[in-house]
Length: 191
Length: 297
Image (tube, rainbow over all chains, first blue to last red):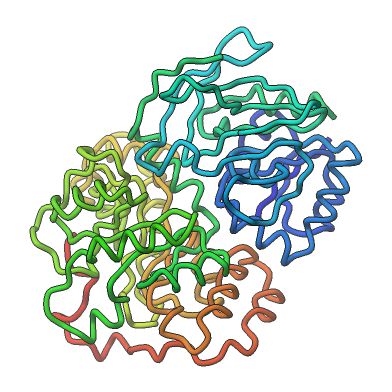
């Protein structure tokens, strides 16, 4: 099994290093031909506008959409979550629309509001240590989407930050920055 | 359901944003319109300025932090991260920029330094990027709390030679460190004038503990790809975009060359018909006192 990391911009190298540490073959994906050769995909953190623009420019949107709809497992982190989702609250930007969810970009605020925290996840015994960097959260999910973790804002309102829809996993935070391997293991398990 | 006890401004959080910028292009902008052009062209962040380095060089006099209204105008125009520059050692300019909510502060030699000492960057929640000509300078800045490093190049010249020299030197010093015996590390720290613990860390990992971007003199897609092939994690483009003939086309081309930096055919394709590059300056013709890279070390 080969896992690709979309390598247009962002921290794809960290995802690849993490997958290789798990003894999984991992490759950078920049072209439709490289996408063709992988069995699962990670869409990394980065700037979603940059990644989206390059994905459109280099003809990756339709092939990614097609593969994911046909059942290829995918994990999107932060910008990757935005790419997978069906809409954002404020911005009109390229998205795959494979995850039935609407996200709010920079939902926690600017960089000075970025943080790390411990996060309880449905189905996991030990919490995850999660790093949120100018992170999005989810404002609306469809019926097929399971919310696996949420965070409460200052007003006590709860916002999903880890969701799963069939073989699609999406997080607001960055498991690849903290050596948190369980989501990558989950991704491989979905193949 | 989690009720987190969030920790802000940790090293992981500060360095993490730089990780997200990797493989991307950070563009100098002086207005909301330029910021939007940069974002649409695929910039991963913008640097909010009153004047680009080429104009600072031409203008002369004391160069200071931008007018806060300029920074706010640019922050309001785009959804990508916004950086801004403070003078070296001017911790109050840095406090002001932090209060505005900028996402990164560049403690920059492009502006006129106010002190031989750099800012204590550990004291801030907002992360800092600093320039470095060599490994010792990079580790001193990281020791002071910088969460990201960039080459110093020679800003505002459109001439990439100095950035290349800085990156080559950094690479060779890192390689040298990895060959040292344990009992040589303290002496290396002394030679590099760098904190022992950081020297030891680089010796063990063979890399800087933070992201390292290219900056200074990058004007073409090939310049950007050159710096990426030399091992930089991404590029800053200062005057090179908005001092060129067709900024939006050149900006997009530099973004694409930074992603496909090993693909000469793609670089050739995006380099076609870009219009005039910025004119540029031969650094040999600049008197020493006009070189910005020697400010702060």
